[in-house]
Length: 93
Length: 130
Image 1 (tube, chains in turn brown, blue):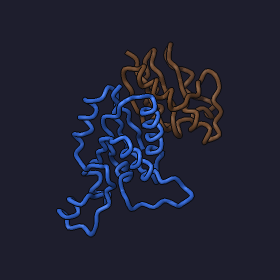
Image 2 (tube, one colour):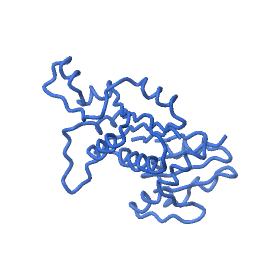
Image 3 (cartoon, chains in turn orange, blue):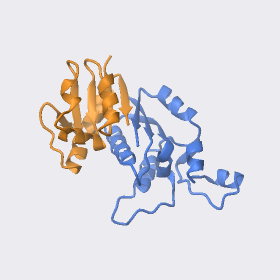
Image 4 (tube, helix red, strand yellow):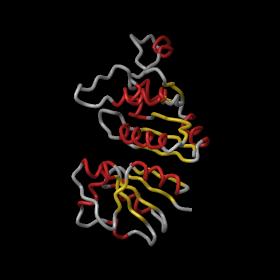
């Protein structure tokens, strides 16, 4: 059973989120959480196997954050699809 | 699929209201059903009728109300969170002898149980934190 984790800020919210991520889960960074991509040392690169990390495109653009591999920029339609495709959605904030 | 949304942030100091509205519009566009909206904590400020943001900024309370009414949504505002923040309907204003009421049409003040009820009714509960 896979879970979509959404998080809206870097720091503790994201930290706790990443601790809970299991193999096969997806993580979606929204709002201020997109700033994590600017961090030179990010734990996003050390997730379990089979995890995907998505970034809400509109929030990254609004903050001047560039999204590149292995992260994937998505829109709200994809956000909805991820909620459908994962059996659970957890929000960390 | 059935969705319930919970909004914890206020229009003036969080992006939660805006994110949730974008998400809700995408849900409806894809043909999903929103079975419950629940405004909790600072999110109750979304339902006030007397906040007037600057004219060159978006009025998220107004946009939310239009969305709620256009799609005839079940929009619940947490009554305990609302009363302590000065978001009251006519009944509460009379009961507590307050000088006015400001709850937008289309919203209902009710208890936290409605969040649980929404979570049980829906296939997915999506929370937009402050």
